[in-house]
Image (cartoon, rainbow, N blue to C red; front, top):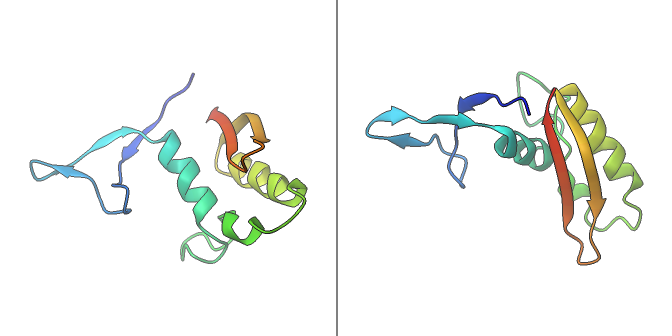
Amino acid sequence: MNTQNDILLTDTYDLLAQGGDLVTGDCLIQQQALLLAAGEGEWKQSPVVGVGLDAYLLDESEAAAFRKIRGQFKSDGLLISVLKKQTDGNLIIQSQHA
């Protein structure tokens, strides 16, 4: 699996620092979470980036959400191997950097 390092964020999206230095590490999970949470237009430098998953929460068909997720992940250099919705409503996403 191809891993990429980046500056890591805390659970509240602040920069993660230890001993006064920024922490870097594998950014795959962070990258997925940011793409899913952000809606289009929320990132000034990349206005078409973001799934905006909250907009799909009450949608009965997950097809539109899955199309959006696949497209956004592909555009951001992620290859999805598994994308499914569990009976409890949770998403299972397995991906890797291209």
